[in-house]
Each structure stands twice: as C-alpha cells, then as structure tokens.
Length: 150
Length: 468
Image 1: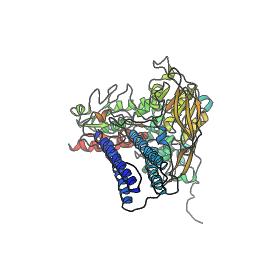
Image 2: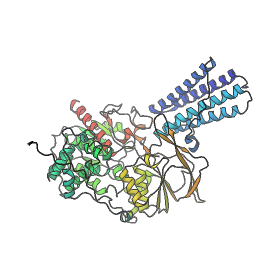
Image 3: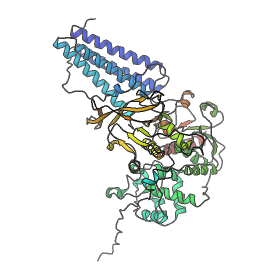
Image 4: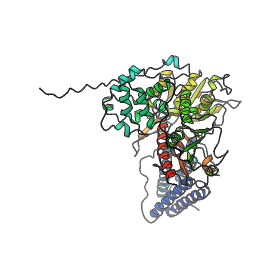
C-alpha cells in the first residue's frame, strides 16, 4: 500500500494498532497466570484506545505534534530482546511493550523522511510522537515497578 | 505563687550506640553495632515522655506496646520489659537490628519534630539481648491443645510469627523449610555483621521450646505439594518469601563472575563462604566488585565483598538522595570505604577469552524534569559511555516470589509479579484453608511487614479453626 494520502496513512496506522492489540490478546491467551493474562489484556485495551483515537482523527479530529520533545528514558534500548514464547514474566511483558513502541516510533520517523508532502510529514511526525508517548508510559511503569532498587 | 508542678525539661539527646571502628570492622564479619549498656538503655528510656495516645504503637506493623516496654527499662525492670515486648513480637532481637524504625515507630514519635525521637529499635535490641544473656527463656502462658494442625511453609519472619502465635493458642504447628537451616532471609540474606546468625537460631530455638515442630530440607511443591499437605493439616500458611532474583536483562549477564545478590549472599551467609576451609563451600576471591542497585541488599553485598578484600562499588542509576537503603546502612558503607557511582547505568558486561567478566560498559545519567508524579527520572547522557575494569558483578535490583508453589497448586490466584493474591487483612488466599503472607504476597519488603502479615494471618487461621 503506498502511503500517499492522509487517509491511507491513517488507515495504515489504525491497522498497526489493531495488529498490536491482537498480538497482546494472543499473548494473554497463552499465559498460565491470571495476573499476566490481565497485564496483556490491559496492553491490548490500550492499543484499542490508540486505534479509537486515530479513527477519531480520520473522522476530522486534529492530531498535532506538540513542539515539546517526549522524554526518553531509553530503558527499552538498554535491555535485551525477549522472545514472546511460553509463560512470560511481568518484566518481560514490559520489555516487549517498550520495544514494540520503539519500533513503531522508528517506523513513523523513517516514513516521515520518505515524503516531501508537508501534510504527510507532519502526520508521520505526530504519529511518531504518539508512539514515543506510549513508550514513555511503559518505561515509567518499568522504572516504578521493576527498577525500584536501581 | 502557682502550685503547678514544674514539668521536667525534655531530654532531646538520643543516646548513640557504640560501633566497631570502620577500619576494624571492614576486615571482619562481626556485628558492626555493639548495643547499649544497661546504663545507656535506662538513660535513653527515661527520655520517653509516655504519650497518652502513643503514635509509635499505631505505626508499628505488629502493634508492640512500645511505651510499655520503654517504661519498664526506665524503671530497671528488664524482665517485665522483655515480657511486654515479646507479647507482640516473637523476634525482638531481629527486629531491634534490622527493622526500619526510622520509617515506622520512630518516625511518629512526638520528639521527632525536635530531632530527638526515642531510639526504639536500640531499646528493643537491648531488652532482647538482656533476656538472652540471662540464660533460660521464659515460656509464656499456653492455651490447652485444640487438636487442630497447621502447616507453615517457609521458616522466615512471616512463618515464624504465624507459628509463634498459633502454638500459643493451642494448635499443633509444623514449619516446613526448604533450606537446611531455619530463618529464611534472616539466615541466607542478611549478613552476619548486621544480624548474627546465633541470634536467629536463638529465636528459632525459642519457638521450638514452645512446641513448634521444625522440618528442614523440605521443599513444598517438590517434596510434597500443598494439596497433599491439606490431607493431613487443617490449615496451611504459605510464607515462602521472594527468592527469585531479578536481572537487568542486559548483554553479558551469563558471564562467569556475574552473580545475583541471592546467590552471592547465600554463599556467604548460609554456606559461610568466608570461612572456607572451615566450611565446605568456597567463594572466588574478587579484586573489583560492582554491585548494581541501591537498596539494603546492595549495601549488604558491597560491604560483604569489601570484607573479603575487594574494592567494592555501588552502581546506581539515580542520585544519592533517591537511594532506597536505610540511611544507617548507607553511612556504614561509606565509612567502610564502599565507592558509590551515582547516576550510572551499566549497559553491558564484557568478558575475557575464558568467559569471565572483565569490564563493564556504563553510561552516565542525569535527572530529568519532574514528571506528572513529581519524580525526577534518570535519563542517559548521550555519548557519556565509559568502561570500568571489574572481575565480579552482583545484581541486587530486587526479587520476586519463586513460582514453584503457585505452579503446583491449582486454583491459587497469582498477581502479575508472580505473587500470591491474599486478602490484606486476613491473608486468606483464593483457596479454602490456605493463607499466605510476607514477601510471597507483597514482593520483597521488610522483616517487620512480613511479621505483621503473619500476625494477621494467624488471627484469621485461629478464627477459622475455632469455627470449623
């Protein structure tokens, strides 16, 4: 799909969020522990929330990148990759989420670099900033819940 | 002239507790703090103004009658003081040493506003040690046998408290401990120089003298499962702690010389690695040791490594102000020569050709602007990478519960961190006749909180046993 219009970009982004929600729902099904099932179901709900926000944008609501840079704790960059298989720990769940949001951020940043259309460029940068916020949300949870003594 | 009696002026001078000198203690494993003399204890106790509504009691997780035992010390009646203390606390010598009183009873002392709060922990320790020095421990009044049997899984602070409370109420109690010694984290986790093991053994012997049956080398979940124990016991309390270490999930953590704090401290405290060949499990001697984390466990690891002759370094992502360890332990570590690397994040451990760690690559951090929660979070400083030569790394960033019991007990509900879900007030789990408390429920916390959870669970188990 060529991303040469605002609608196409938004459809792409909406599909990505839906895909992410499905990924977390699939992981939730595989978890043996109730607590971890709930964690992944929660992540899936958040992705559906992002999807709803983008659908609202498609219906005419504005999505603007605020000028302010989103804080980046860079925790996602320093931890090793986790293979999403078997029963996962809470720490591994957060690592998966941080890395997924980082990948999405990078995708939109790269896409912004591929277009000269100012409207599309701004949309990609706005989407990238949204993903950066999502990553920060998981990094803060990791900082508060896992790195309590560090 | 007024007849009103003159009020005694407040004595705001907290009596210091003598300690081994830093240059001496950094070369031995003997206890750092030496305890009050009777004279100092009486002086300190006399400073207590005996508040009519003492806030120290309400801020104590096991509700010890603090003004009560302090009054006894002030009057020189140590035997009665020990009785008052042990009425609510079956591990006073332990709590007097390792409880964070500065965040609990001492924090709410009315004299704290004038920086003269009563040294409750030191007085508690004094009484427990005084009683032990008298020889025979006094057996408290016991209820008649009820014929009910309770299994306690785990011989740490929560399990010991449950056992102590239920045996006095007439129930038959058996503690199943996975290791070869009782005490849990008190034995394998906290070093000798902070909590001598003889003290823990003494407290365990006291429970034995009350009639608690103790079974060691028994791994519940493997040797026998919870459901099998339920065939024999009327109720079960799970207090198996948080023994599963967290790692940072960074490259190089599988290299030789990279330990979890659990492994390192167990080798030193339980297996007495520092006394090889008197004990049989040696530990490799390291020259430069980095400890990841800033809590009490990290301080314990660094101070242990230092005593074995290493240059010990604490590496912490945040600044000194955010260190979660007790102030007393931070000061002790600094005095002994532990080096602190604040605002430092390890990125990876680099190994030599034989697979042993040889250096760490780190990044400097800076604290960002306060976020919506008001916290200033550490953010990496781009391009500030540096390496430090190191031949051992100890990861002390936290623990979660071992999943063995939960994974072998159908229907026992678990939280996201692998903790057992239990009612905060009663310790009742999702399974009938099974209670849980301490670190297995809360994640790694303090000894006194585990004891508080044990006390609540014991109360609930007793109520259940009396009505079923």
